[in-house]
Image 1 (cartoon, one colour):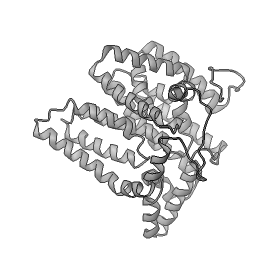
Image 2 (cartoon, rainbow, N blue to C red; image 1 turned 135 degrees about the horizontal axis):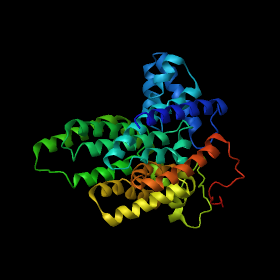
Image 3 (cartoon, helix red, strand yellow; image 1 turned 180 degrees about the vertical axis):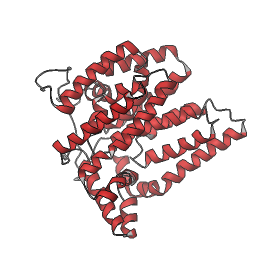
Image 4 (tube, helix red, strand yellow; image 1 turned 30 degrees about the horizontal axis):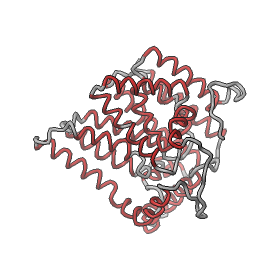
Length: 362
């Protein structure tokens, strides 16, 4: 059992290496090509010791510089390569698997890590140089730190939470905030505020969080707050100022339908929903922590007019933990997840063979 996660990691690593060989260029969708350009700009400034441009690319970008700094572990020794950018997701994969295995032990959900990896959002996100996969990994690590801190009684895990929360927001703009933030607020309701040691732990962790984020987000809100606030109530506006609309008869159902259709799949997604209803029924303290890391974020993004399917990727972490406790049924979910991976991730099952029902684009 101890070697299964290692073999799983090696399998995913080999698959990702194969994938980058078959798909060597960004497909142009979403923002992947922009992330590639931003990372290469930062890389070229670093190797030229051009510190003025390093600061310029780091603090004036629309996305935090942390996401561009991580691939430098591979780019600096091996040179500029799009394939290496994709393979840098293996660093997040290691964080994700380690965190989910630890969380699975705490929540008695040993299969949660494999359910999560077999969701289309996760194995699909791993093939792109976008921060969505990193968001999932950092959500898992942040939840682990929060759980291990034991309501901020453990100083080292409390400090780790502050560092991880701040680092997560330096990988992507605010997305993880709406999942780890409510979870932290729930833990705050359980904190013994009369204990001076705990108060200091909270203060130190919040100080680390602020230290990680304040410099970039000061610049970000000065430059981009008007753009964000203008899109939130009406929807996405492109670079030409055109309001982009999509045919969506039930806007409030966007994330639920996306969750079942393209994020988790109908079987694993259905199992996750069963886990949510079961947790609501029992209302155990640990379950409420997982629900607080799920429902507030989904509700917030449902109310925001601009819809993006990857805004709710982080919720898959607590949902996998809720679903993985149904051990026998989880094996069925994993089997269906393998079929989705073989069809969409490897291509050995033709798309003409329906592995699961799909919702038409229109």
